[in-house]
Length: 142
Image 1 (cartoon, rainbow, N blue to C red):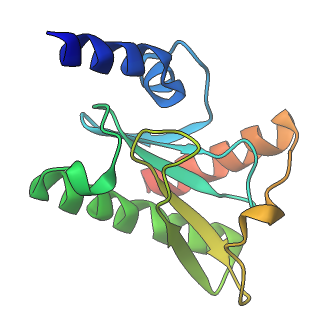
Image 2 (cartoon, helix red, strand yellow):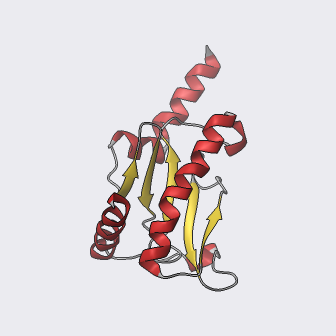
């Protein structure tokens, strides 16, 4: 029972679990029964989007095979919209998971080598995030 209690404590303190449940607001651009996609509030580039499973899992390789494949299938839905809006050369993928211990896939528009450098992350205005959210939601709805 102690392991179950530890898991519940981790989930209760997890920022992404709080975003999933609506306790913390986000700039959500897409959602289904198992995943959410929202803008990173400190993006490396405009339209930097996170895809997060709704069920708390710490490590990407702990996902079941079907969850793992589904995560990347969601990326295939979101990435073309990011590319269309930003006119980037490619949409890069990053899975790191140390800052927030909940599986999340970063989709980052890139047009240069080292475009995925986390040191390029920066604060952006609420207005900028809201504008990008609107653009992505509109593009994804088509």
